[in-house]
Image 1 (tube, one colour):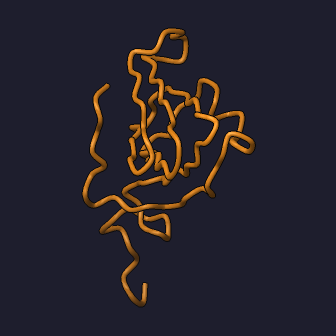
Image 2 (cartoon, helix red, strand yellow):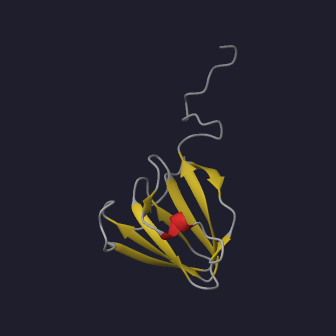
Length: 115
């Protein structure tokens, strides 16, 4: 996997709080994947987060390793298996992007006024 761009018409649907090594959810440290139709954007404020990407749910050796330093971000494409490791001083959050608008509808599928 190479760094993938989030499509320009996609928007942030939700963001996590900032996590540190002491309160990062255990699920992020283990093998998991991003939902269908959703990009994860890891934004690092302090320290570093190492992102390990895997070919599938059974892979044990990462196919991708990316170190995301303070002031940088990395993306995780939809349905891509991965996990992260943090430096002791790491502080980061995750933005979840999709093509749906804030009301959960895809563009051009809004109800017309009066219908």
